[in-house]
Image (cartoon, rainbow, N blue to C red; front, side, top):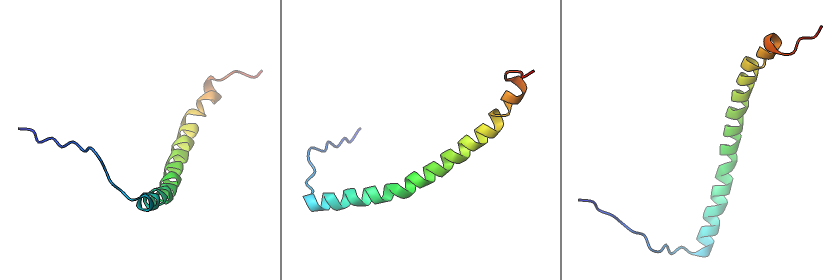
Length: 62
């Protein structure tokens, strides 16, 4: 037996929604900083690992 619920409407005052959206925007700033740090570390490691391959297999200078 499956109990399914269907939501048809949400009643929320406008100012409450504005406060919620401002809080969500403020909370996204630390998340963006953390993801930027993780991405920078990942690309630095990939650059250090795969960037040195060009030294061995890149175009030869005579």
